[in-house]
Amino acid sequence: KDLNGMSQWIRPVRAHQTHELFDSDVRYTRDSRMARPLDIVEVRLNAASPSFYQQENWLVEAVRPPSRVLTYEGVYPWDELHKIEDKPDKIWANGDSSTAGINDRVPEGFARQSIRRSLFLVGLERFRMIVGQPGLRFGDDAVKVQGEFLYAGSQHRLQVTDPLAFQYARSLGLGAHEIGRVFLTLSLGEAYKGHCYKLIACVLPEEHLWNH
Image (tube, rainbow, N blue to C red; front, top):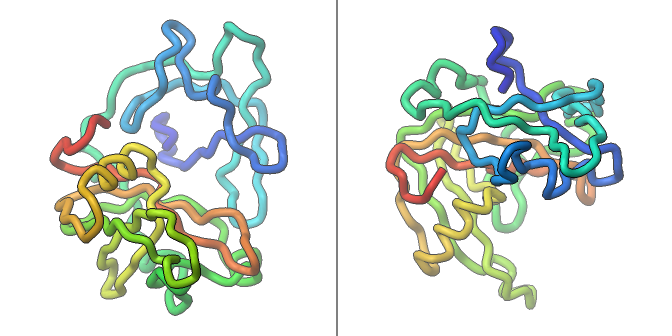
């Protein structure tokens, strides 16, 4: 989030088809360390690049190595995240679930017409991660990690894309693992086969179960 008084979301992106940042984009100018969750950074942006419901997209500057787009400024305290959390009435929309998820997607048409923000930071008293092979009955033996939680009276089970949380959950083995109090960064991803999927982009647990 932008901490300069606006508290607005910014999603740095690149100007190519997938919009993903390069590895060099998330390393710091001075020592090439990889940026981590809760780091406070200064990021060199070029221009706003909103796309339908992903209104938070901004293009990062095109720089030549060894220059970087990130400068480290410090660490944001976990116990102050409540000051910048979002409190939506619901996580975009409920009632549409994939085979393995619960309230984990919205129709692409609805997202394009009715949704104008694609990022939330929400605080939860209880959260658990589920490690399993949800596609096994369809011949897919890939291990997936999902996050399960209750928000505003509705149950959710969403895919975890946070690499640190994913690796931690995988190390615990198959099954459901209670994590406790967390803040989650939730992202509404790009459209895929007619739906936009809700993703857990970052897990910030109260207990330092893995290094933030």
